View 1 (cartoon, one colour):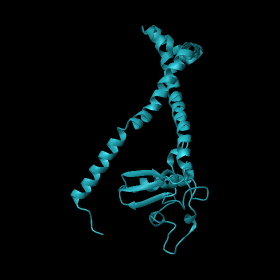
View 2 (cartoon, rainbow, N blue to C red):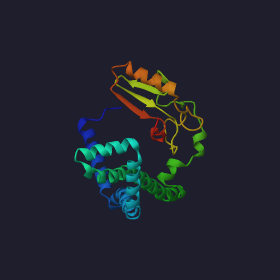
View 3 (cartoon, one colour):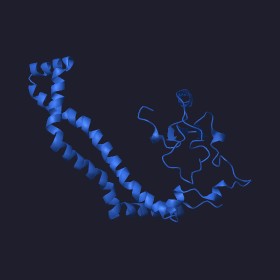
View 4 (tube, rainbow, N blue to C red):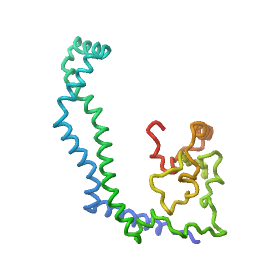
Length: 233
């Protein structure tokens, strides 16, 4: 196959760029993008209206009842910063409430998106449905097919690690996804019967391999979906 010329490749790049830009400027896309922000603002105002004063009072009382923190507050009084007493409580409430509001807003958006996605899948013949619904033809295996079509195992020095290019590696920390796309080229590795999640020992071995290979400057987390891991992992 002949290589595409530079001008042709640049043309394809610009074509993809303006199509993506126009898509982002679509009113519905803008509205859906701003939806989480709108929900967060609404939740913040509602929580502030109903719970701001009790929350600040509870946090302030906890600060003053804590022996160590009361010493710190006393030190602020001694250096002429007594006014900060009235600031610390509200700041701590904001610090605690902000991530809670963000998480609730994102969960609400996810719940609102689910029925719309199910309706698209229910239509059956759409591209969205083809992404999620199994096809009986998937069970047919021809002689020229490979369970590892992209050669991950060939370039895997350790479990979960793919070192195909000298300067970068793939770290497949787990082999589970929230949705299993039918076109996935790692279908034989993901899912309940796949390669599973890397153990702590296997992760340490992968980290040691990366640290011992100075040519590596980029580590790409993949799997599966690494965002399914807990915050600790």
